[in-house]
Amino acid sequence: MSDVIVDHFVIRRANEYELVEVAKLFRLSRTVCLPFLPTLHTPQEDLAFFTHHVFAKQQLYVALDGADIVGLMVMEGDWLDQLYLHPDHIGKGIGSKLLADAKAQSDGYLKLYCFVENERGRRFYEARGFIEVSRSDGSINEEKMPDILYEWRAS
Image (cartoon, rainbow, N blue to C red):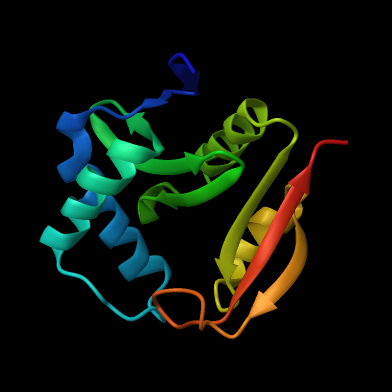
């Protein structure tokens, strides 16, 4: 995907020099927007995860407002693995554009997990065509929090 400009935001593949800021955004978004989640890792472990796993093995995209990273999305095959926004930038269309880009890159099928308690996230995905497929009690995720498997298929 080449750089995509949404209003004054740019969405593009992340580079290795942005991983510190990506890890900080990940932690901030989870802390503010998902306060029910346990804190399982240190900031250094978050950075190591984004460096050695996400950046090395998956597709990492960032949304930029000028030089500031205000959103991130991680994809691997037909999985939308992560989508996080800076809390101050929620509701500005960035998440919708990141998701639209994920759909455009897909083969007409995407899946993702969303925590049951993440009502805002559930409304976001459901409003954009994702259908609940199953629920788990949390035993399959690191946080041990109940979640929902969603799927989207192009019509």
